[in-house]
Amino acid sequence: MHERRVIIFSGSVQGVGFRATTRSIMRRFVLSGWVRNEPDGSVRLELQGEPAEIEAARATLREQMSGYIRNETAGQLPLVDNEDGFEIRR
Image (cartoon, rainbow, N blue to C red; front, side, top):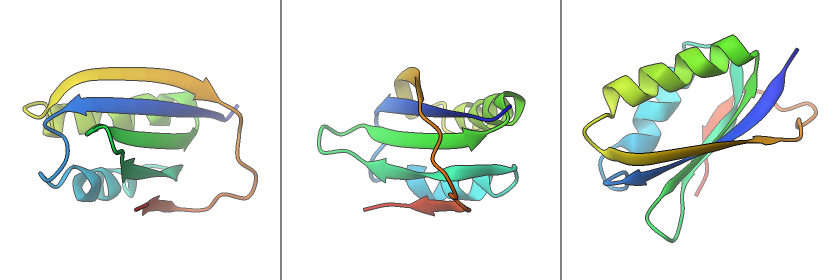
């Protein structure tokens, strides 16, 4: 059963390669979605796939970027039909 989650990261997450690192990590998993910088200085990540894949990808990102993340909040979103791949949005 697929699901879609939004995860908002705050801290020193802009200007440190967070989005590029996120894209690199997500390519290792069977997930779709996107990541972008937000005007408030946070980074928004939307992921869609199997819950175990989402959690594994999230844990990997959290581990690699731990020095930059101060806070992380997550929630559920409706599935997006026909989404393919993972991208950085501007």
